[in-house]
Structures are given as structure tokens and as C-alpha cells.
Length: 510
Ligand code: AHR
Image 1 (cartoon, helix red, strand yellow):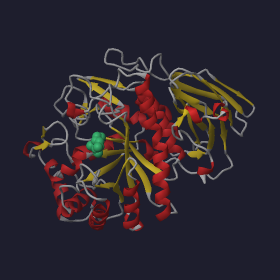
Image 2: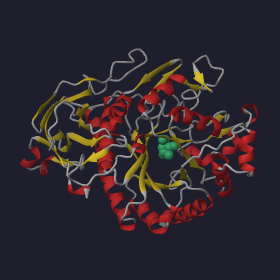
Image 3: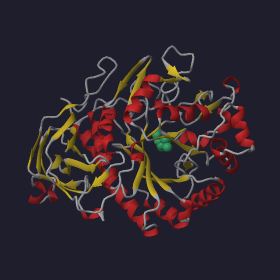
């Protein structure tokens, strides 16, 4: 039903084909009478892999560290993520998940075996952060754990045992072991990934083979679990088709999708020192998420018209070259206003497709790829992406207001993207929020919003900066942060908003 309305970022177009109509003024219309759906808070999930300094040196500093911590997890990270209201956290990978043997990470830390983290830098993993550490941390954060099981190099028994270890309340070999290790009550983990990137680092499988493997693993994962199949790499629509065709709906709760906003896998470019051309190409890749979601959803609709199975975009975000001088296997990159644009646009896409996209995980939470938090010794900084997710959190579990967006084009050379991206929702107390993004690198956008209802007040915040390359650093941690927005005027049922170039605004209408 929602496809009746035009949405954000409907793809790139060539300037030569543009018609005068495409140059019309930005206009957004609320469809308050249309059927509505909930924006599942799980869209705001995060991802923490044993990769670089995400876990070790990021979240986890150990309980003997002088950095204030709770059971070895940094208190400042816990506070920052609590403020974001993160609904779920995916762990332990990524590619690492298919090399991870969970029994290595339980029991006395000094007795835990070491392994080599073959995917990420070839460093020695001492398993000091394991199942108890992660699940206790999730309790502290007030977030749902999402465990990614090892299918690539594990066994069905190993994964079935992990489920029993963390979830079973009765007497069993695994619950006895858990209690022996100090945890009486199970954690009751609901979200389980059955492998990761089975088409690549998870085993280089064909979809037909993985569909059978999935069925086998899922059969022995007992309890009322939300099981997520390893999904397509970006536009591999055949992967989705084969899985939907071959996995019975009653065995499947979520189907994953991974898509990174990347310029070119062989020439990713610097995270901070980039040209407008590189910016445009990154945004083209970010906007492509809309096409991906539509096309994967259309395939899912054929096999699952009632939309029982969620599309779970459990890896998304910008991916650039690692920062000079850092370990190439650690994927450390800075985070600029470009990343704020990716976050704003992508979350708007997820909202507007929240009938099917019901869970997602930004890659990755701390010190890796498009992180929300960066750390250096005792210091912690919040990135522009953090600020966007914090501004947008008002949409979690709110009711989507379908909108029609007519946008001016952001033109670079002979290519164009819609300049304006938007989404709107009404929260449980009846307050309406609208998120607006102008990705144009140089032009402000004036937007007329027909709200269809008589609101009395408008207020909100903006994240913007002088340069696209601007970012927070350990010497200037608050260079970028949201401030009160003065550019919105409400008159009768019409809201007029003036968005500066490359800015994100969230408004509250009452
Ligand atoms: O997020 C980094 C890596 O990207 C993950 O480990 C993998 O799943 C993906 O290819």
C-alpha cells in the first residue's frame, strides 16, 4: 500500500533526461488517512564484531583498567549507547562469527584458549570477551542481543548447544555448564543469525546449498527464536529468490541483506579527505538502498505476501580506506558530515519501508567503519552519525505517516539524485516528528510540507556544518553537534522549512 506514495531516494538519473517537472519546488505531503505501520525500533540496531578496536580497546577494556568500567565494559560507552536507546546489538560478527567457537569464550578467563582472528588483522584473540561478557553487557545497556551463529566452520550441535546454554531454564548439560560458570537464569536470547554472508566469508556457498544448510541448522535450534537467514550481498536478487523459494516460511523469521555505501571496492577513498565527486558517488550508493529494499521486498512478497518474514539489513553504512597509519585489517575510519547524510537518508528509507524492513544494524558501533563512538585511551567522542541516530530515535516504535516527496535534484556533472529525503511518524503520545535531509553539497532547499492537520507548534534540531569533511576529533570533540533549528515556519496546515546544504533536521509538530 505504501508504494502508492513516492518515497525518498528513488535512484540516480541522468541530467539529459530530466524534465522541467523534476525541477519543481520541494514539496512533501502527509497522508494521514492512509493505512499505517509501526517503525520497528529494531531498525536502530547496532553491530559489534571482534574486529580491530570494536570489542578489545573499544567496548571492553577489562576490569583492571583505570578507565571506569562495569565488568570490563567502558562506562562512558554504556552511557552513550543508553542515550541512543539502542534496541539490539549484533555479535560476534560478521566474518568473525563463522570462525567463532563459543565454548572458547566461557569459564575462567585465564583458562580460555586463544585463536587467530584470521579475517581481521591476523591478531591473537584471547577470548576474554565471551558469551557472559556480551550478554551481561546487553543487560546493562538495556538492549536485545542478536547472536550470529557459526555455520561456516561450526557444527549443528555446537549452535544447538549455544542456544541451550543461553536460553534453557531447566536442567540440561548446557544449562548446568552455564550455572557452573556463574549464571543461574538464562538470558533468553531471541534473535539468532544462522551464519553470516554464506555467499562469501561464511563459506562461499551457493544459495541452493545454503537454503538446505539453513533448514538443517534451524531445525535443531530449539525454543521460540527469531531466526535470521544469511541474506544477499547488495543486489544479488537471485540469493533472495532462492532462499524464499526453498525455506518454508514457518522456519524463517528474518532474511538478511548487506549493503555498504562505497564508492568503488577497489578505490574507496579517504574517510575525511574527499572530493565532491566522491561524496556524490557515496550518496548514490547510499540512495541505492531504496532500490535494494524495493526489489528484495518484491521478491519476498511473491513467497510471503503477508510479510511474515522481516527484511533485516544487518550490515549497512559507509566504508572508506582505513585511516593512514592504522592496521589495514582494523577498518578504522573517521566520520564526517558525509556519514551523517548516509545515516539520515538510510534511516528515512528504512522508515518508509518499515512494513518489510523491521530490523537493521549499522556497521559498526565503536572504532570500526561508520561508528557512532570513537575512543582513544580514556577519551571518547561521538560522531555525526551518533547525533543523527540520537535525533532520529523519536521514530522508534512510532506509527509511520506515509508521505509523498517531490524533490529538487542534487546535480553533479551529468548525474542527479533527489536532494531531499524525508520520513514522518506519530509517537505514542500523539506527537508528530518529521526527519528531513538535504544532501546537496552547495544548495539550500526550501521545502513546503502539507501536513493535512492543524498543528500549533514546531520545534526541532539541526545537524550541519561549514564543510562536508567536518568531523569531531579528539582535540575538537564537539565541533559537530545538533543545535536548535530556527528555519521552520508553521502556518495553518503548511510547514515551510529551509534546509542548509548537507544538513539533517528533525522537527516535532504538536
Ligand atoms: O563489517 C565488516 C565486515 O563486512 C563483516 O565482518 C562482514 O560480514 C562484511 O563483509
